[in-house]
Image (cartoon, rainbow, N blue to C red; front, top):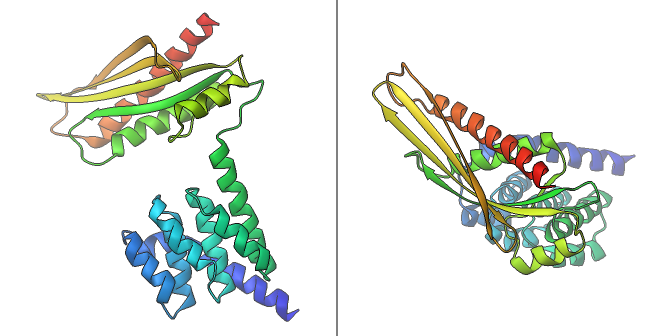
Length: 269
């Protein structure tokens, strides 16, 4: 019974810390988080650091997380395993090494899950008989005047969510090489594969906001030109720059372009 209580307590602490991680350690560097994971005296801080590293999207987080698998705390080891599974940028060898000697049942489950997630990510998305289109998303040229990756991320998100509603689409992983794509598609000759490059233009003229979205379409992985789609929309009566309205139009245009592409692709079939 005491063992069950300890296990439940470890899981509960982990859940609470997962919920609080983004607020507690948001914005810290990988190096700073790695230092906390490696040497802080409080297991709760080490757990938060591990989970934050898992959300960092940085390959540099793999090494300190592998080190976290050797922590004296079951909760920290479980967090390090979960973080590697979320990160999906490596660490299978250290996870398997720890699995061989891990005594905690809860941590073993986390280790096994992380190994599965990383190996699935490395293998690429699942293609099946029902998959009709395989799409690799390339660069989005952002001419909105904004800094950061907000607009390209928005375009990618809308393209993927629109395609998921249409069905029959699978998107290639960001780091897929030409050889990997050829090997994957060779097994599924019924699938048509495409590569998208896009551009977003935002312009203000007087009280008008004008947004255009262009999507260039290529074959994949050979990238032979297949055509392009251009859509435009706007608002009037604005008193200045309005990012909310910009995003509204971008979403509308991207979703419309995806719908139009779907119709065109169906005609090719």
